[in-house]
Amino acid sequence: MSSRESTRPNTVVILAAGQGTRMKTGWAKVMAPMCGRPLIAWVVDQALALNPARVLVVVGFRGDEVAAAVTKLDASGRVQCVRQEPQLGTGHALQVCLPALGADPGPTVVLYGDMPLLTPASLTRLCEAREQSGAALLTCQASNPRGFGRIVRDAGGQFARIVEEKDASPDIRAISEVNLGVYAFPGRDLVRLLPTLSNKNAQKEYYLTEVVELLVREARSVQTLCIEDEDEAIGVNTLQHLSQARAALQERILEGHMAAGVFIEDPATTYIDHGVSIGARTRILPCTVVRSGAVIGSDCEIGPFTHVRPGTVLEEGAELGNFVETKNARVGGHSKAKHLSYLGDVTIGRKVNIGAGTIFANYDGKHKHHCQVDDGSFVGSGSVLVAPVHVGQGATTGAGAIVKRNSSIPPGETWVGVPARPLHKRTEPRPDSSEQAPPKG
Ligand code: UD1
Ligand code: CA
View: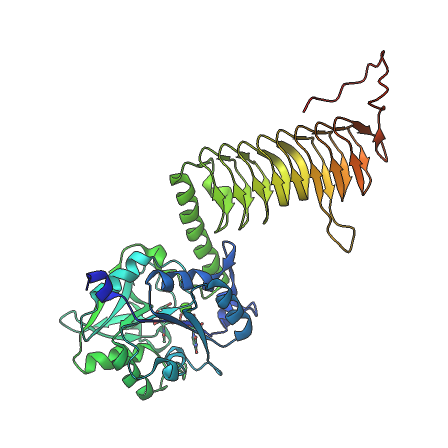
């Protein structure tokens, strides 16, 4: 058996049933938005990265919503939800898993659904730290221990127990080493001890932390692993914590893109969600927002002040400039929309110029419609294309043209005016025409 195989947990349990009253939002806390996906998605990723045989997610408050989100994330069929109703604490959350856990769930890792920044590396180290018949937990020296359970050690420095802040004396509150709420247990002992938990504490809850204390009392080994990077310890209890966690995750996402050769001029004002792919040598200029699912090729330029929404695909060398918003938009190679435009529900070919202020009016108040703009065409400044519209290859719209719905501009033609109509018939060109010839596709 490889060492990786021997430390691999059989079961991971994620606690995600709490309401998150400290958020004051009414949402299920684990559904809070976090870089383009719900908070819980990051934790399910952590669990799956350990490659366990199965993952149990405890859901309760707005449980249907959470269960639906969790199910959507899992293609492996290893993730299953367990209901906790009512929610009587983190220990109770595991008690309701007892039927699913069975007599021996094997090595079991417990994660809290509000800790999105833990890395697979730390979780793997935790599993390795656990000795054969003992438990292990992650701790951190917190510069601000706000609300965390404190790690209490005996005179010899050995781990003794965890004391919740609400139950803590001033002496214990002064301890800066905190419990991250991440544990690796021998499954058989976890299952044996869970029914013995009490709720005699300030919150009248069943605390999972008591299980570790009970193991110490049985003289079992409980290893603590203190992680260095405090960012990993950000737990989301309030909206302020949510913003801190988001910023830290954002930094990681941007670092990943930069490492892959994406130039990001100002990470502090750049927002790129999870699940965005960006090719090398693309330049992202300040104050740009790129939402989940966007696919951006290499050698593109986006920004400053650009909003790239879901369904956007930019092919190699495409450019979006300031105050341009895209949604369900494919922009072909080397095409440009540099200023003040809305590209919604549109397929744009290669080497197309979208003039300043162009709007694809995709919504008629009831339905969305699609536009297509073929290769080499030139959409003049201030054009409004009322979808559906087809602009043929190498065609032109004049500045300020309003192209009516269901129009199809033939290849090479120029349409101008309100409503837009052909400037002249291509078949009968005026020999003395001073009008600009349509560009060659
Ligand atoms: C918990 C720990 C604390 C630790 C901190 C780390 C306990 C008793 N305390 O405190 O030592 O420092 O996490 O982040 O475990 N949940 C349920 N069902 C419940 C209650 C909670 O599923 O009945 C879930 C919540 O949705 C949440 C997680 O468990 O994802 C932790 O609950 P929370 O109330 O945030 O615990 P803390 O007070 O932060
Ligand atoms: Ca918490």
